[in-house]
Length: 492
Ligand SMILES: Nc1ncnc2c1ncn2[C@@H]1O[C@H](COP(=O)(O)OP(=O)(O)OP(=O)(O)O)[C@@H](O)[C@H]1O
Ligand SMILES: [Mg+2]
Image 1 (cartoon, helix red, strand yellow):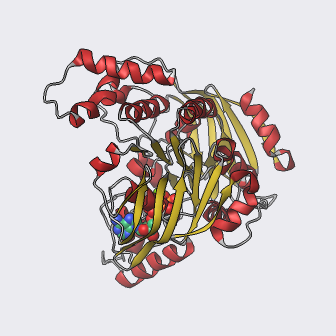
Image 2 (spheres, protein in one colour):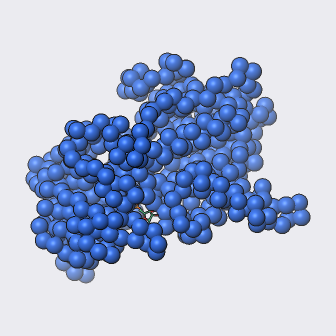
Image 3 (cartoon, protein in one colour):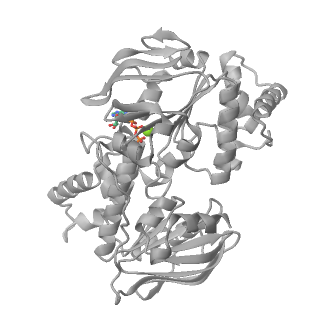
């Protein structure tokens, strides 16, 4: 058995876990669910020796530990795959997989031939073929994940934690991953999934443990929980999925006009327009070009031909600065590398894009209105923090995502492009965020949501555009926007 007994942990004054008991048997596939900041990552960090609990004990292979070092946890078979996979980008696939063996065996010299054998062996056990000599920075995200799993296998994994490690995978890649996880299960490896995409986890997990504010609120067979029951245990209230698409006034003016833009090897001949108060959804599989279109509108991917206008004036976008100047805001998907100054205070992050608004005519920063704005955004987006002066690193993953959102909303752009706005955000807060987007649209903002989260698109979009292999295809409008037809069109 693996798990915890009565674990409690606080950071400063903030309680992250309180009296948490949790257990996983060999061969279990377990879902660890909970809202942002409910303690999931903290629980994993304690079981893997990265954080020390204030009280309680850890159980690994049936043996009880008061505390343990990361090395002891690895020796007991604990492996964690984080969202960024913690690989070393400039080393090869083989080196990344084998690296730990060298470290564990305290070998000083790297032996490329031996590394390749070790790596090949681990990949074979997963039924995966891969170029061993490619550097990890050059391979796609799905392959990175496989490398991370191979490395875990190579280190004798008995319990594998995947902390939001499926976020960047396509449906096909997830199926492949689930195949591998089922293979691990057959050999007695336990896997614990942390994911906010509950539909996915429900397909593979047998057991579930749900945390709310650091305490276990429910556990059992996942069969006995439907989406609503899970949401209720997570939030403590009933969550209903209602349509939130704003009504667009008939005479609304066009704010964003994209006319036949192309970018070599990325997308071709893409045209669409968005009115004030309208929410346009753009969806497509990973690799379809949806990401690149979103990035191009913010000057992060070149546009080689075609035109873009905002409020009737043609603009040239040659970088984020010019996009911002033209009234375009952008919430990136990848909060970890693009969205935040992680070591800066939360407050500063919220205001990073809007700071000009607070500089008075004489150049004085209006301190009082800054503090008020920060407090308002923290309250509006329910950012869970004890002090806005704490660094962004002190926030849980989903709360970091909210800071990125607050930062752009605070700027009140004419057009807001949101790329995966609720990636990593729990079901209850997802609703809050969609409500805020709806409100901004009702206030007249033109909104573009680029997302592969179909239920979310259905909930909020007035119109949906599907991207296939770099080109826009079918368009859905109003009542025609529903899950089954969108999934069908995506798979086409
Ligand atoms: N190093 C830290 N310093 C201060 N507070 C922390 C630290 N790490 C975690 N916390 C706090 O502990 C609580 C639990 O955080 P944790 O990261 O475990 O949440 P989570 O369930 O993984 O959330 P998410 O779904 O957003 O990733 C949060 O309130 C968080 O702000
Ligand atoms: Mg987390």
